[in-house]
Length: 153
Image (cartoon, rainbow, N blue to C red):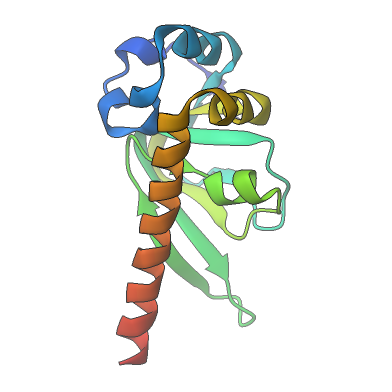
């Protein structure tokens, strides 16, 4: 089970400069702090399962998480290793579709969760955050295309 922990506020987070939250104004950071939850996940714990609904955005504060799909033969296909400062689950959040991958902790991790309503509000009110998220999605798409090309050739 997840353990509750105390983490620094977003304004002073060691990963802030490497996340889209660096685009947030002080008042937005305060709203995130008031509404987020943070928990300690142990190695082997699942953050979310493929097919589950998304209710917000996860931000990895420390540790490592693998994103994978399960093949029809029962084998895991690891798609990405997530490191501190990375967002998890933003594709499902933005598309309002179920998660397309499973996220499992591979190194004890502190993970913060920001509810969907807060992220949606930031999209509407902060063009820099919105543009940053579009760039993140584009980068992810580019990385996926490169991986597919590597497999094909």
